[in-house]
Image (cartoon, rainbow, N blue to C red; front, side):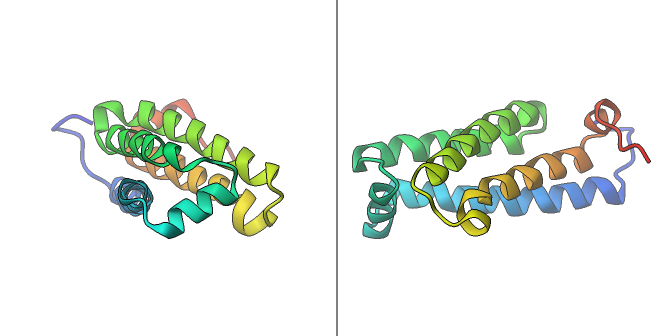
Length: 131
């Protein structure tokens, strides 16, 4: 977006959605940095050894940083989508409930891309809604 491009309601709605998702994902990553017992229990229940917690948290944090920087937002969204795909696969593998666990990554992915679509007119031009 250039300095002369007006900031529309779509732009601000996109940033509101993106900000909400970024805060949630930052919280998720920060839990892994501090490695409280609940994170270790949850991750081990999913089949992840405790020594992977920090690495996954670092990946999450990098994805969020890339996502909130306008110049790298698409790359951040792509990488975050890949990470969410792994989370979905992990939840499917352990047969967690469909709507609350297995599809949670899909919900986040839709919010990630929806927020980016609303805030970036180039993405709206690339992926227009057709009626």
